[in-house]
Length: 295
Image (cartoon, rainbow, N blue to C red; front, side, top):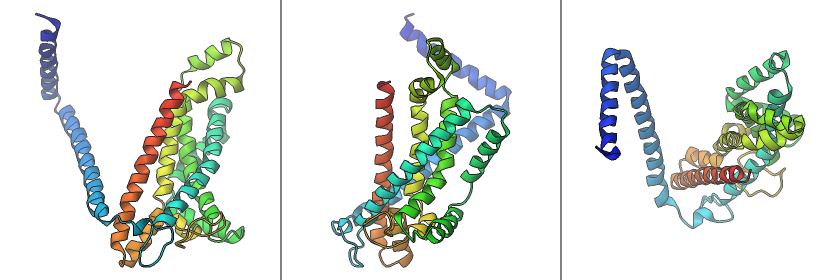
């Protein structure tokens, strides 16, 4: 019997062994069924949501929806789209360096039994679970009122940067911890210092994990409404300056659906928002592959 003929027989034998093992241990069979059921339910919900958005959004896409100036007649999303891109970029510029450098300090320089490190990690995990409306109220009281920024893109960007900072810090920390110590020991053995080892060996190896946190942060910024209503505002205009007020795509969709007079434009905005998130994820994955290949 050839190897190709032996493979199906071996696979059948393994499947039979698993079946008998499940019969001997019903709890294991129940766990497997629950895992598969959860995966199937999640997949069905995801397909339903995407299908619902596509079915209701695509027919409502029109040229007027992409007009440069918003009016009550066209319900244009273009100003909100530009505001979303500006606010997302500004929020990442603020949060990513702080989160990455903080994670480098916690993993590479601070001692694991340091009480300050324990407090920082616990605080970061706590901040990750705070509702976004709390961040919005803080941003309104501190950035909008105390610092006299008013409802502006800058106030909104500072607020969302605080929101995603714990997420980026924790994902970067896990990515750095996943890098094997053999990389560090090899670099030290060749005479490289601590700083050079971190930035030339450890950090490039951890880039895919770091980008995963950045992607999650982008998704949270793009889909945020509660925090931005109180900080960036709801004015339907393009970004004139960082101190000008403006609504993002998520806020634009929320306002249109809340008025119940422009539901077609709201569905159209939803499909554009979905496409934007998909494109950002694809672009981030492509950048991660380039960085990994170029190491």
